[in-house]
Length: 432
Image (cartoon, rainbow, N blue to C red; front, side, top):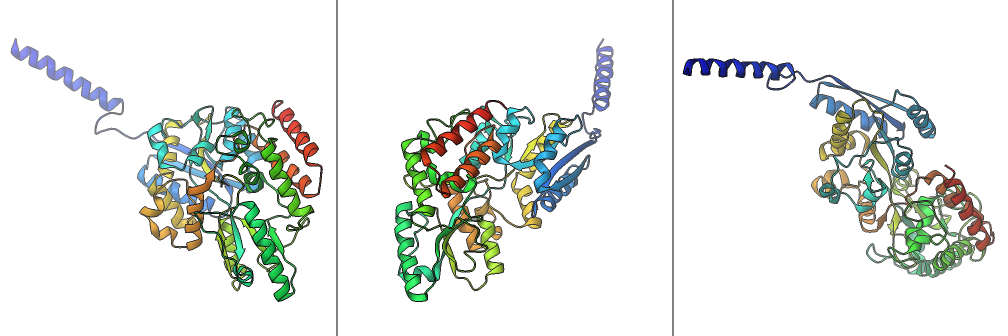
């Protein structure tokens, strides 16, 4: 009886072991071959960086074949729409975080809460998490970030005997205005030059990323003014037209029409050629100034504010198409790409950048030796806030970020213009 039982046990065990091998379990498992397709825009460093990550991942997981394709940046969003309308989609895309809500609203993306659970969110700056969250779910893995700051002409500041504001104590906009007026007078008296108080990448200023923080800063955190838009991203009434917001719009318009501190027409390279005292821009401008205007003496300080300091954030994220044929492998790649190993691989090819992941610069200081990068990283972590979250962000940026501020700079009636643009946005966003 013992021998019979032992024989049956051994036969059963061998059958189970054979079954395990047949089903891809145990040491004899042959990894299943998978293919991933990644779609990226042609932006400096992005394509080469993502390809480097893909190569590193394939070396780690040889059963996966990855193809990276790209199109020019100005055609990327259009091609995404075409791709998602078909059944042949790229598994992974890299896209700007403000567009995530829009894509999630239309069901184009997979939620990623399983690879970025609640406990892991603290590894990222809060604004990066906010930017990729829609209806309580995470739809993209944060990666690169951006932040704005004020570049200032050191020589002009010295002429007036004014010290720039320290990182931990930004000027209010009123303090900035008074100081810049003093500097402008000193420059005129001592050099004979008429200079602008502030210029932007494009003049007059335009774009939600740059200008809405001026308005939001007039509110306290959590207030309608600070939020800028309703929680569902569909309503501006009661948010973009509060008394505090209206006062901030008036200040912005006065820069052009009353104080003449900002130009109403384009001024190429205004800051680099010494035609403006301050310049609202981001990290890329620091690199351009060093290259194109090596004799210019300049520094960086945080954006001014009315009540609450802030800068808008946002940048490339990794997202997965809802129609992906390999979602499990795609999620594993995205998690690798956003890890320290993935970030280092990317930086080694494309160069360092601002990051949404906390602590990376402390762990790998060799990537952050540039003092300008260090300053922007500190501004990002200290003052960074996600842009207004709305499934109609393209509409919002066009109607509010561009058209509203351009009209204000030209002297349009503030009350009528704000009301008109709000109505235009709310009508169009509800008909999407």
